[in-house]
Length: 85
Image: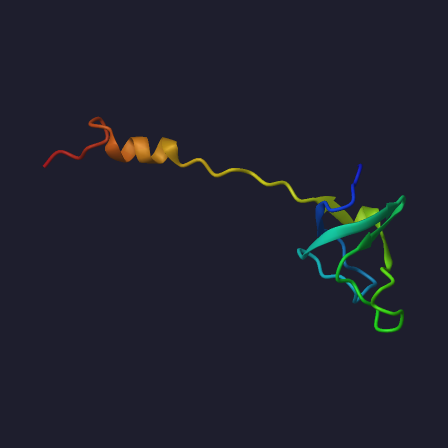
């Protein structure tokens, strides 16, 4: 899986760490496979300006899907969908 700087990723595995949370979305700050450095991840020891490396296998890219409800609005406005009185 390829990652790029600025990409949104979601955590799929937070076992063994308290720095990330499963289901949370992060932004990739740097990629050096097999690790990612993420914005907003702080271990409490290293200065916040130094991004901690996390295994890339713990994340997957966020997939944005456009919601299209035109099928349902068509059903509501269609004469075939009207309920007889």
